[in-house]
Image (cartoon, rainbow, N blue to C red):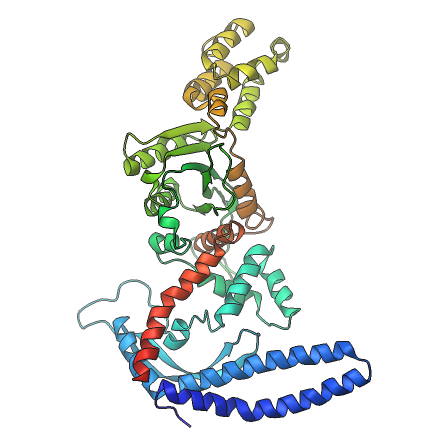
Length: 483
């Protein structure tokens, strides 16, 4: 039976479900009755669960079979494909994975990119074709969306893709580690704008209006997998790869209340990149523009003493919000204390015995940087060209306006960068910095992006926005095909 319109698919679905369901219920009812008589309650519960999964698979198979055999669907798929620069090739028999993990065969319309016009050269890599109807229904690499997103989430939270695969297998779902990797790869954003759009909620455009915002930035560590150049050595099957350390950079955006505490009811924005500083600044700019940072009452920028933070981020904020915008820059209190201690380690042990570290720490907390320099010079009798004096001038004097901890505490501003330190540990160190892990940059950036959204409460927005982006095309086809 072939449906001519969407309306006729209802009869097909009922016909495909009615007879098998009646037979299955009768058989299952007998099994449950016998189990209860024999006191096998566990077996009866398992039988009910099996019936539930079987019924879900039956409905899915009936729905997909009837939908894919609707003649009008192909007509409107051709129109949609034309808008996307694709043409219909043929129906292909493929295996797809249902939400329960069951694999079924269907005949799916296959589209490929249209050939370039004569005289023009095709630019960029030529990707393979696409099962267009599956794509607009939300299937990810031929896996039903519910299962695909669950597998992605599990793989990002687990220590490895292999453990995620084994966890799903315990539930009767067979997705290999490589299949799950492909699902994660499908979540890669084509550009920065869509990457930001995916994590935004309905009311996030005005989220920062009139509020105090905490912006923190820092870098982590991971090992890049980079193929070696040149010919493959004789006797080797692969060319080999390098595993250099790189520094992925991360930022967090939190909303603060009047007391300087984080508003926990508002999910923060956390993201980062494996690229260089320019790419990080471009990514941060996308977030600040979309979130209308100029409407915030104040931005509190916290970080360590890394020059790239203080040279680039304040300029970015002023370029978006204007030179009159209120920006407070703070170097993390713990990093400042550590650097003060490192400065005293540059002198001999005999001179260090003269130093009362708590006294200098109190001066640092009060923001009296010049007094620290003067007292150190007189107390230790060191030259201006000594290592400790160079350290004090390069790190402390140049950052003196960012080290007003007592004054900042008085106006209820945070003085620590614990939010970004925690993010580095949770997002990067606990997943992609593990021993023996080497990553392709494009792929690990997707992992970092997804892990940040899952851990910090914006995974639901990704799923919602993903579904919404597909809804328009699907509803267009469904509505038109029914006419």
